[in-house]
Length: 358
Image (cartoon, rainbow, N blue to C red; front, side, top):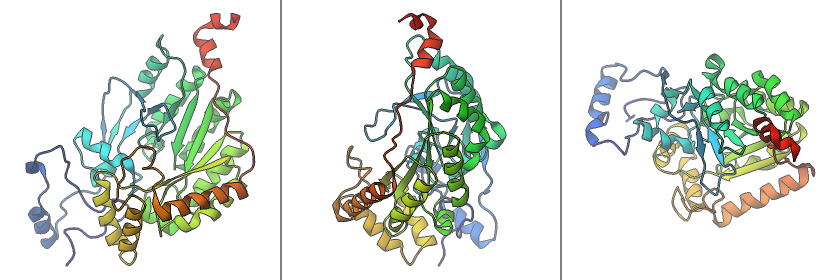
């Protein structure tokens, strides 16, 4: 017998999950949902809601040794892209929402982000360390087309000639090509484009509201042709789902101008284990158990490993195969050109003109 709702088209998560910080009395009870299903009534709207929030700060320090960034900035909390594996889902619980459908359908918007950003980078104590947009959720998710908060932030970064990183899986970044080209003139920008698969069918299942694979490959090409350094993120690699695509994916993006390819092995931390398992059994039931078992093999028998230095790459035979395959692919297809460290001297001189004397 089916559960209280069928496969939800256009969403990654297929269920609402309980916020572990709330008392059980706050749960949406199954008996209510079952009643709605029996009476053919809609229990919840699938429409995305946008709520403006007013944080006191915008730039966050990143302390994890597994993440290659020191500071991140996220114009939005929650992400309409709906990637079912997304590690950021758990963070939505801190705002009082669930990591499942809430993460995709309730988006917190920081319209004051540009002014908060400028306040941060003009503070006397700030020394121009690279700030990466989308350390948590995608700064180019669909609503950015309308609100342009990320574009306004990039204008601030260009004004102060500040080192900037971007992580996205949305071709909307090409809208801001004018700003990115100017940042690249001063070696102030590097872009990470997330491409988990070359198969559009896989993309639709895993990442239902993201840009198509064709559009993402185009984004890599256009950015590279305009002198903007691009790294492709094959993150995450999921056993028996996209793990067979490492060689062809690296080959393809290298032809389009990507300078590097990075990867992670999927880990289903916190509530994501329940969300991903539910999704797998509903959308790919013929492969679900095999995929879940192979993920567990990469993490010592569990779906999640929180150990720094190991959690992003996994361990065991399957994780080692992924590592070796990626090494072979990069050696075979990527050239010797490397991503350069971003230059913060322009920012420091602009902020303190007296530094030009030294």
